[in-house]
Image (cartoon, rainbow, N blue to C red; front, side):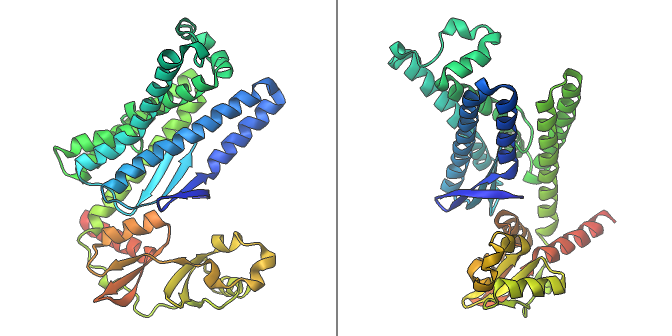
Length: 367
């Protein structure tokens, strides 16, 4: 997933997905050509959208942190965000509280704006008159004329859309799964919630075709992909949980020297047809991908060592179940995990090896 890191808060990497940037650039270009008078207010609206999505996702993450879950990164999309956690909440109460935190922030901010504009400082005309809001045809003009109304509108829509559409991976779908999980196990609750989500995605797509609404198509595709990913993740977790992965632990991993410069490393990667490699560091092992190489200017490759850009591998105990290993790999985006046994390095497990174990386990279960 291509994304740009914009900040780091409480150990959480905040990243802007490439589609968000393309979305903003496309709208700005269109307005600059065809509706230049709408460019400034629309850019302000998009800024409020970005800010609201960011704070919405941070609200989820702060509640998750308070429950003991480690959040690696938040990826911001035009219609929401994705938080990558080392572990998913399986207690219904935890998932319910985490899911509600984002929309609660949006609604709380909306109510605060209303209170300030209409009750605390009514003379400043920060929001449009209530009568003007009764005519939907006025919406675009009101959004352009009242910046604070834009912020209010964005948060109401974002909160309502995420909470009241009961489809994974949105908050409403997570609330639904949490409520189901009070009466059944997590995997079954996920199965039911994803089936409902897929049905809603199909319904939204068909309705979008009938009314010619492009945004409904986009949302439907997003829900379809997200729901299937949730189902696959739950299925993988259930299949891997009892699996003994000790036989795939590589106790003598082959790694590139961290002293190699990037030009030398690239030539070796091309020679071996590898896009992801382990790197031997002074304090263990790291990881470098072809994508990480591409982020460094080619002119600097000869003077930059592999160790300078290598990402540290996550470390887990040999007693950790296989599904926890896979969840860590997914959340960090690093396809290797160091396994420690009796406080000593025991070996390395790769994502590819876990995927093979999953496929074999799945084949045995379905045969």
